[in-house]
Image 1 (cartoon, rainbow, N blue to C red):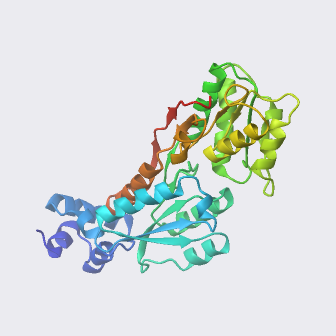
Image 2 (cartoon, rainbow, N blue to C red; image 1 turned 90 degrees about the vertical axis):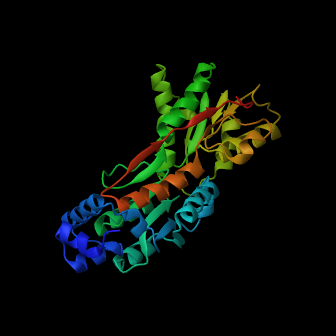
Length: 324
């Protein structure tokens, strides 16, 4: 095993710079590159050094339990963390707390990187700005972020939404209702864009009256009731998450409608309950557990290798069942 003196001599950096680097603290990019090159040439594993006593934060909103698939993502994160022998800390961070936490963030923090899960667009954008400004290794889970300096691992939810809506169109449905909060949630915006894409792809134009854009204090159940009471009722419903789809099925059955005979219903996420629901739900599988595992892997890669940012898309799959 090479000694630290060998690394110092080969890399040309000072002893203090090397030890700052080994503790996970920031060093100049050229110094980091020289150290990594020297370690590689000497056969020294940087991962073995960095993974020792590493702490990663999971940054969530106050209402994190509303994030679809949160439990599965956490299972993936903790499973990989245990395998890598690293520690995880859960931190609730929104609004002013984002600013306060990152203003005092320094190399002396126990945490060396941040995984961000399930926030609204306003808080995501604010946190992304601070992470970029402070050059903190990070990764957003299931959010496609436009800024080239912001890292993420996600399903292409716009493409996934397009695929499931196109499935309905191919079955003859053109009156397809949907709902969401695109002005508040980035993921809703992307899924509803995919809804529009499916119509355009098939030479059609979505009827705006079937697309319910909800505001902060609007509820999904009120929107669902309004859809089902429409004089020109849709023949299908696209739930941008499984919970909306299942709410819709329950309300439709209360009103004496049959699914899929009277109205077809599809969802997104493929939550565990989806396959056991009556009727079983046609939906898009989001591999939440895999996203959690990959979030840890990619964040460690940013810490241990000369990788500035990661943008990774994970494949989705359609699960065709009884509801459509």
